Length: 96
Image (cartoon, rainbow, N blue to C red):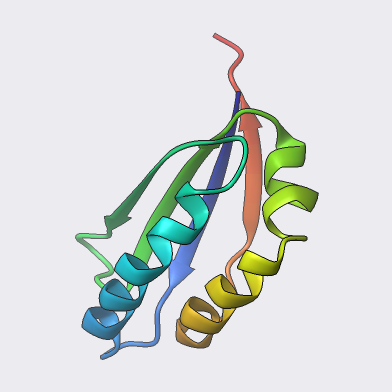
């Protein structure tokens, strides 16, 4: 299993709008092949930053799978306008 990790820096003042857009986008990602689960958390210390954790069965399910899919265009349309700067996404594999 692969864990996708991204810190999402949302433009200050747009947090509520982002959370509403994410609620609309969540069914898009959750319907993708290889998707296992996700968690979106908001920072206590930096309230405009969110932590997105997504479990995928395989790395290829996320990229090129989800990122190469037609559904990703809608995900991008809903969410990418909120980020400044654009998030760095990393993938992790359990070791212990």
